[in-house]
Amino acid sequence: MRLKNKVIIVTGSTTGIGKAIAKRCVLEGAKVIVHGLESDWATHVVNDLGQNNAASLVGDLSDQIVIDKLVALSLEQFGRLDAIVNNAAIVASSTIQTTDRAFMEKLFRINTLAPLMLIKSALPYLEKQKGTVLNIGSVNAYSGEPNLLAYSITKGGLMTLTRNLGDVLHRENGVRVNQINPGWVLTETERERKKQHGLADDWYKDVPSVYTPAGRLITPEEIAAAAIYWLADESGPISGQVVDLEQHPFIGRNPPKDTTTIPTKK
Image (cartoon, rainbow, N blue to C red; front, side, top):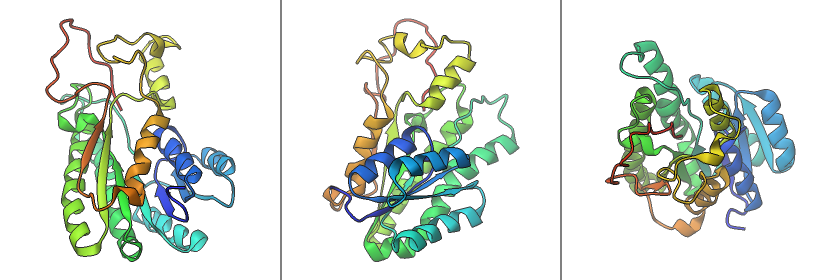
């Protein structure tokens, strides 16, 4: 049990990567605070994990009250807080033509500002446990795709946040901050998004090999497996690091010879 007795907040954990991380945390001995926007989904996840292992809070992370309640709930239910997984994010398409101020601010509040505010709210309790923060970013943080402008900017900001606080909080508070950048992951949301774009129900079975050298997309459970290392004590003193989890070298990769449009990635 690599996370025995640890208490972990996982935002955006009613579906996809967040849900997979919450499940894996419980399997490794942790108690988790489940968070999302849909009360029925949250209830289902808590029931699946077990009432003794999880509690849930439903709310919009753009509201500071919700952020503070997440921290308070971990203390009320389990008496401590050891780690945060900042996974909640809005994944929305936009270009320079379609990105207006309101849209950009909306994504920034959830994808970049909310993780910062949650870390700040939880810091006294994380410091007490010499805890850790794991931010879930995206390979799009490096530049992003043409139709993911706003999203990519917010993930770039999250990566800077990780490296900055990973240094400062580690030295001054004993709290480690790291980040994983998933590539293209087959979440429930991604399946539906592609179907809404007009693809077949089983589109993920026939993705060009240039994007999936392994012959398939990454699963949420594979991202969750990697997350455990950063949440566990076995990652030791490592802090301020960003690790890409994609099935090909994302930076500096030779571009494909065909002109196929790169599909949207999480």
